[in-house]
Length: 192
Image 1: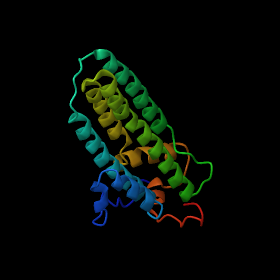
Image 2: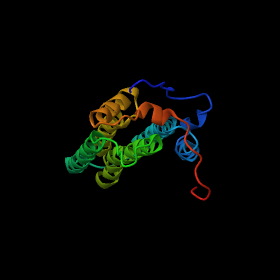
Image 3: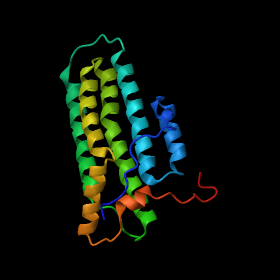
Image 4: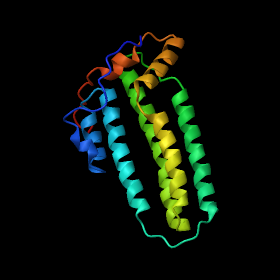
């Protein structure tokens, strides 16, 4: 059940993902009308642009501090916990409480958004470390961990195949690829 048509990463009408912060907001607003895979990929792309913009902003700040390693060590420790959380959360099979493609797509989205939140944390820890230590070293440490977390979080075709194999090993007959590329049902009135 790993045969599905991968729609790719970006479409011509998704130019707005390249606008920092605004692209992330717009991706979230439009996501509910799209298949789950398109939704999470748009959000991931907008997140990467926003992340890059944040890194450039933080590196261009003028700092007059010491290169005290204690803040960098704290950032590394907290970031390692985030990576372990992502590995643990993404290592679990998707929820199959309801055996429907819509529920499976919802579970896929949930895992993605929790992983994305954990992937963002190391950079935020690094930014906090910049202000505490007045040094760019904590930011550099946070960036390394965030880049590693982004590679674990990205909704690639290979990660979808891995999750599908876990579902198949668990005895599910549902196709994750088909569930996340199918058009999403219209949300109920009043949910957004």
